[in-house]
Image (cartoon, rainbow, N blue to C red; front, side):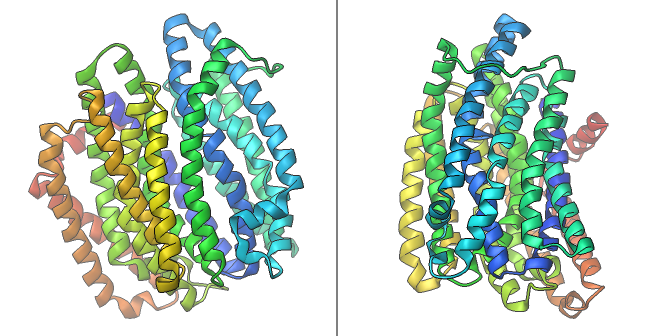
Length: 514
């Protein structure tokens, strides 16, 4: 398990660095664009390639590719595995080139498909213009994701986890150049998106070559293995499509409320920090590990890996979820409340942030359960489950919109997340031991929850006592930092005292991480 935790720490550490830089990026974007038309146009333009990315990048394609590549690598060696990866890359690239050309031609309709509320104002033309520049990102980032899958199967996690840092560095640099030379902020940002895709792909191509997997471009061909890959990936792509429909529904609802597309985007960025750090780390590390264990019929090892991943997830996401629900106002106002981002924007974003936070444990625990299916090359069941989540999201987002406005999109996303988790857990229990909680997880979960609630109460009290300082320019960042540090101290002390976390295990993990 020590190797597994070290891998979680490597991926989580780099993802944390990326998310912190992402916060800096989003703070800069909020200050430059606020929640106005340019901000909403950029959010939609940036969302379009990322929407399709879930199909072709770290989503369906990679979930099917990684177990097959790992099996070939372990069973047949480097050369056959390399040939399979090259065939997969050629097939992926050919599909994406066609998709990119079609999307750029049909961009106005794609924008309306994501935000029909733009139809009657200038946001449509602006989002279309931005979208045509940003969309090629999907080609480069999807090839980068395949290369990440290759590296992860080789137990080389650092480069793949570090690559997203480039996106944030390049977008921050783009905003800096725009300010320095008087360029249009929105247009410079979308050109930065395209440049970041190329940079990430180049970085991972070089890393794969250094790891002994120098992939060459070749003509696409339909081999029996590629056909099997497509058959396995298709249901997962459909499941990913269902998830994206949920996002589309949320954007559609938000586009009919001025500023709401940007409010939901900024709230999403806050809860994506713990989701990305923990969820991505678990999804990346657990899938190849489970694939190997289950292929070797190591049911007990698979159960231990899944349970420790769930424990790791709960220990970090339960306190994060409660913090987002307890002090969303100070978090949003201090991080984003400057420049063009006003108090009304901060208040609306904080409401959405609190709702998203309540769904955070469900979103992360899904990352623990999904690899149990994918490791057995079962992508159909998650698709069927995702359909139920989509139905719930659709009914709640549209049905509640007349009652609670744009916030219905966040409520629907959170509710659908918990429904998906419950159904994934129920289905995974039929696979044997892997999804069954062990005695340690059962004992520690309520203690972690109790420590998290104590932390949330402490953070809420400290934020109330510091209200004046949190509103003071210059001091508010320091005040928020001290509140967060105090909340973390409360949590770890309470978790250790209640038995939710073991001090000796934490010290051991730190020593091994060194």
